[in-house]
Image 1 (cartoon, helix red, strand yellow):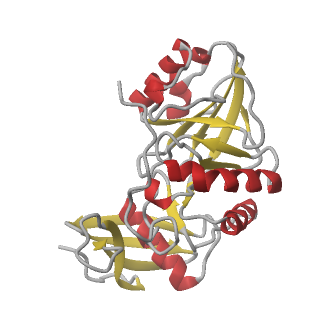
Image 2 (cartoon, helix red, strand yellow; image 1 turned 135 degrees about the vertical axis):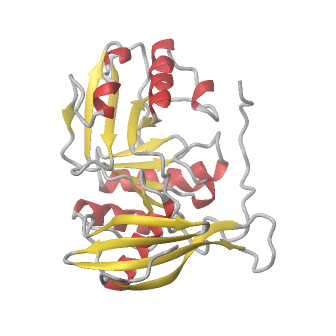
Length: 304
């Protein structure tokens, strides 16, 4: 069992202010999502939360399959969590057409996680037509997530009624406040209230705001970086307007072929350290720099 205590904000200077680069920091492993409504309290880790045994079993099964479990709750009210029914949502963020579905279950074990892994909407779930927005407010994981995230969740909930949820840790405490847009799994970090509203409004119109955009969950970080630099180069902000077709890596250097409409770009990115204090800071942040970006032509040299 882990120790349940409130973590302070011990990240380097520049975190939470927008000064630290956020690009290519979305959780690469989070392709499939499981959202479980639970009013709380939330311990620092899901395994330590006071949840019914059936819910813990569902979380354990999801984790074994590589599905990311999250606890969620409405930002403007608290509903007492009883023995059921349980409101559950599932999402596939990197399907050809990403989707989100929800259902109500007397027994959470009835949710067919195998269907989710096959990219099929589980029985007893229905597709959700509107976007869902998650704001990390997990104080027991990091106090800044609640201090910065709670006001954003409440303001965003007022502008997007019924579509916004507080959630447990989504990855990247240093980027609090964190916002995740489902079903595409778009991550934003170091958000202000105005930035969160702008990002949510853009997503509802099928677009990305590049400022404070961390990337898309479920794809490798170098691919997130390559997409970011092509968007910055072309001004293409539609969610599906840019896609990585192939990559090849050699150490910290990755070459990607990125499609933008009928044009393909050869993009080379390099993983590098960012020291917030401007010196050889012990707690550096890894990010990516652009090494090359050019229209792709057959015969263009590739990494060897």
